[in-house]
Image 1 (tube, rainbow, N blue to C red):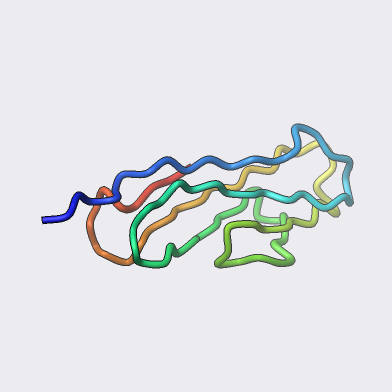
Image 2: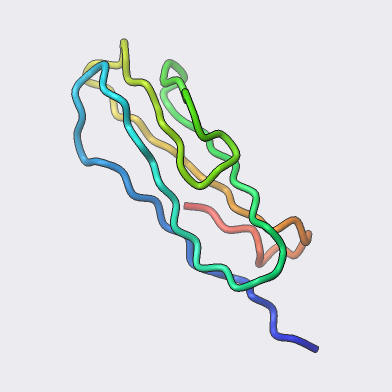
Length: 91
């Protein structure tokens, strides 16, 4: 039986600070060696933060207009569709 490619590391990078109205790019890095394609599910807080591109991909862009002084947090869940709990990673 082949060794499972899971769990695998997932990390997110983003700028430390931005000014209100600037775009933030959150980029995921997943070191996955399986054959299934990975699925990316992003959640962004606060609710006023708008994902303007990249939903379902490893990189999203978020508009910070109207969010002056608030911390913007992106949470990512990555899975390979196998239903194996060890193949579902969060960052």
